[in-house]
Image 1 (cartoon, rainbow, N blue to C red):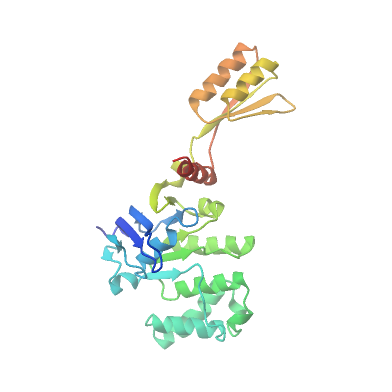
Image 2 (spheres, rainbow, N blue to C red):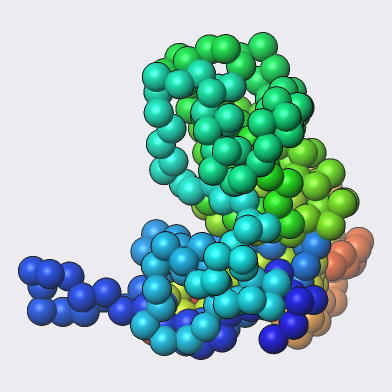
Length: 311
């Protein structure tokens, strides 16, 4: 274990035994992953895949059945390991009778901040998350998006080195999502590690550098996003072809589209692209272009989860 990693999980397993059920629930099974310090990391998975359980183990809200979790080299169960961590749960609840200023003052006091530091830090954070004029408003007046912004301010109150954010842009409009991404980008520029648990695949693909996908409590895939989505297929454009050649293309290609200028054929591999080219040339067609295409993170996610259903 090393402090070069913000998060290190080794063989994590969590089994729940419901009180009124005979069957155990395995939320995590032998999950091992590392999150380098200072990166933007996304954790993905279908509902019930174990994402929230994993995060709760990191903040020691849940104890693993087996395995270990460390934060900056320290065991996650140690209070000192959690001091540099800012956490925003998915379904957070703040006392609605408090004002934004009062709530942040309460949480910063829990973090051990001195009164003079809290007085300076709270206005800075409200300004940062776009709630500058709402400090004296009671939380019960806040929309879902405003509560998410306030939750982010709460997670940042003590200047953490690691941010654990569970669905941080849930309920936030597109402009607000962009603003939150910009805030988090600036934080990672100062060395803060951002760990996001989200269902918004496009947001994760836009923001994160690394990703891991959980499936039925197991780690199904992990790696750098740019590598996972690179080089998935090829698009071949050609002149119009006779019917038999079109039928053959539909058999071997992922998709075949007829355009005003000719035909566009999408393939999933280099081998299929070469087979398509052979069909086109055999039918006397002219190849206009061959272009490598990348898949999206959504394509990768669906491919991984579909393999679960096929198993």
